[in-house]
Image (cartoon, rainbow, N blue to C red; front, side, top):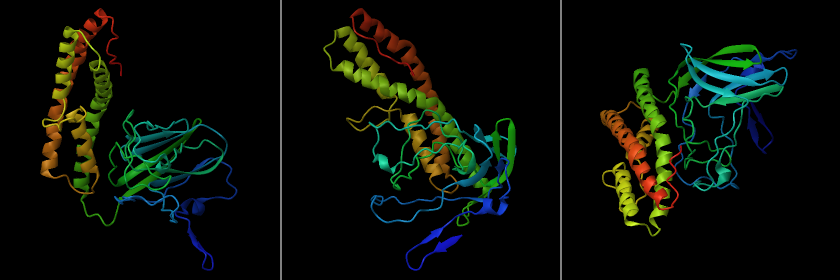
Amino acid sequence: MAVATHGRGFWILDNITPLRQWNRDERETVLFKPQIAIRIRWSLNTDTPLPPDEPAGENPPDGAMIDYFLANDAPATLEIKDKNGNLVRRYASSDTPVLPDPKKLKIPSYWIRPFAALSSERGLHRFLWDMHYAPLAGVEPEYPMSAIYRDTAALPTSPWVVPGEYSAVLTVGSRTYMQGLTVKMDPRVKTSEAELQEQLALSQQLSELRVTLEPIGKVFDSLVQQLTKLGAQSLPKNIEEKLNGLNARLKELGPPNARPGAAPSLHALDSARELFGQIQGVDAAPTDRVKAAVNEVRVQAAALTKSWQEIIGQEVPALNQNLQASGLPPMNVAP
């Protein structure tokens, strides 16, 4: 629905589907039948974003729009399920945001889209599902250069769903409401359903790897910081030798040809992140080289996990024993 004034501007109300279904005498909770959701990449701008004071219009919401009416204030949950009834995504009115670490934030904070929980208040509401699976838990949010003032979503850590039939299930108190939800592909994209399924399968393999590797990465980064701080001190020779040995083991987990002076990192985790971004960054079939790279990362991840268990189970305790004997605080490797 479009509304215009005489030369001053115009407004567009996207998706009036709930208005067509609305009963003005309605007093009960309602989950409206959603309109067809189009899987489309909304912002592909890779240049410097518009400054906050630049006049600009507002794009349509980037996701599947799910409208509902609550007759009374009540806790609510919304589940997205596939055609086989498998859970794809779950939201709750009690959800809390995953906030970025201000010290690590590389963008202005005013770029970030405010968190919007599923509303539990009486009235009419619109909620957006981004057409992705549930994001990885405990992963620090990262944001793209394709930013929009106060409306920039974090980069996804989970894959797109493939086009098809889904269902939205709203639970309010003891009652459940369900509506079908159709997801269609951007009509400009000609990638086949089989190729999109292959893309999803590879992406899920990488997500599963990251579930294992991301917690290791957090402890790895913490351990590197502690060892760097410890190495700046004057240490007994036996501790210095173990410190150097542990640093050498940690470097073995990094890239094979690391840039001199580069911060230590987990090569398998970095590769899994990069490959995930490459596969999910385009609506195209994965190439043979990408498929081979995913298999390589799986092998790297298995080797990394084995080495990490040795480091945490043997080498760090050995260093801690010497540190405590010298009256120094031990390394902390808690998750």
